[in-house]
Length: 237
Ligand SMILES: Nc1ncnc2c1ncn2[C@@H]1O[C@H](COP(=O)(O)OP(=O)(O)OP(=O)(O)O)[C@@H](O)[C@H]1O
Ligand SMILES: [Mg+2]
Image (cartoon, rainbow, N blue to C red; front, top):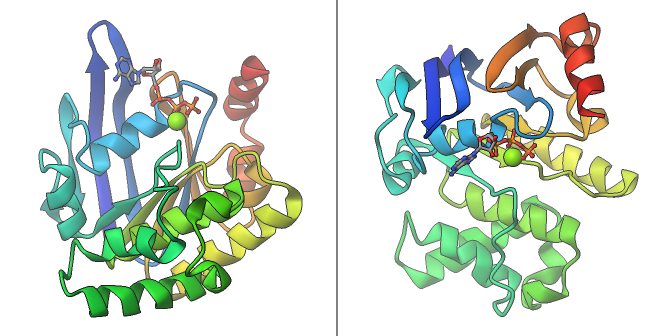
């Protein structure tokens, strides 16, 4: 079953075309990697899907229902959660309180929000930080904290923007394990990532953007051997 359908989405900022006529689909329970060089339009696509900045043209559908044009809160209620490329951690709050912020979208009951936040902290392997200030956490832990906060809205689709950037190999492995656990729960993941050794082994499919356009799509092994993809990444070096 198709969960997300991006249809001919273009996004322009004045003279800059950040996404040009991009189409792809993501099936329920899938992990799809959205990759491409710096400035390719990956975060712009996330902003379109999650309602932060609507497409200039084209449509985005979740379970066949149009969500493009909705605001971020409406997209979240429809089932789209996201993390941000620059982690938005509330550093003076505890890890638990950070996740409760997400839980409050669904439920204003403090006790219930606290319970679901505690459960999610354990799920992302951060249970030991529950009452510690988020400022005491490493970047890797703060990224997983952001994942827990996004999961608190009980999404159907989770958009993760570079949750593995700058992590050491052990931290990448820990993060990959969490992404796999999320899929096991039946939540689909669209993962923007430059850390290809993190996303390639776990993705059901890869979509490649370059200068705003989709240049390749398919199984990770096929995409990584595609001359257009190799050329785009070499150009980036
Ligand atoms: N709000 C904006 N106003 C003007 N231009 C923008 C805006 N947001 C993005 N852009 C431009 O759109 C293009 C795509 O940017 P985007 O952030 O989506 O790329 P990205 O693939 O996420 O890159 P990175 O890998 O570096 O995060 C870039 O040229 C960027 O400068
Ligand atoms: Mg980006």
